[in-house]
Image (tube, rainbow, N blue to C red; front, side, top):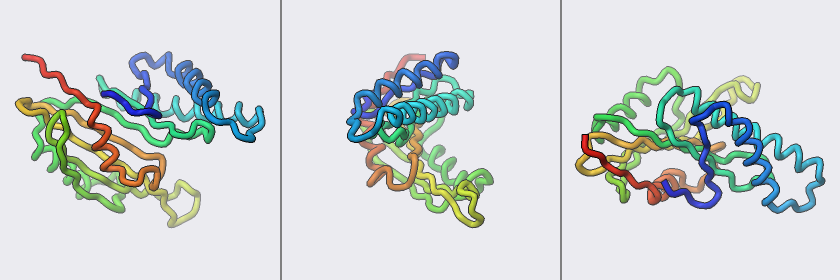
Length: 202
């Protein structure tokens, strides 16, 4: 996948290299960002915070134990020390468009893990094939330490179905907060413009 500016590939193949990658990437991004009136001590703090967030993303991907996942993070303003979003790309064998759509609908209907505040289907096309998926807002209660208050997570899951192939490519994007994107489903569809799928004879 060809990534636009501000997206950065996360190396997860060798877990022992994650901390070093996170630190060097954070240092490079912060050093290249406009410093403004930030004192030098604050720059060091921002680097530490961003490094920790980058490492957390990489470790979370490794902990899924799903082989072959490709991961990238969006860091628009390194000087703020925040990862804006993450996206993972992986292949699934023998899963068609209708079956995938039904699978997503069942998750929304029956999930005990997530409390969906909103869930809507996404359909479209890309250079790599037909696309269907789910745009959702998931409520996480108790994270602010205030009873009855929830943090909303915005997420988009897309399935890409290359013509003439029984398999699919799953793209999952999670935003740092609601409002990170003006139109997250469309921006993720735009991201698919850089996705190329090569089919191999079995």
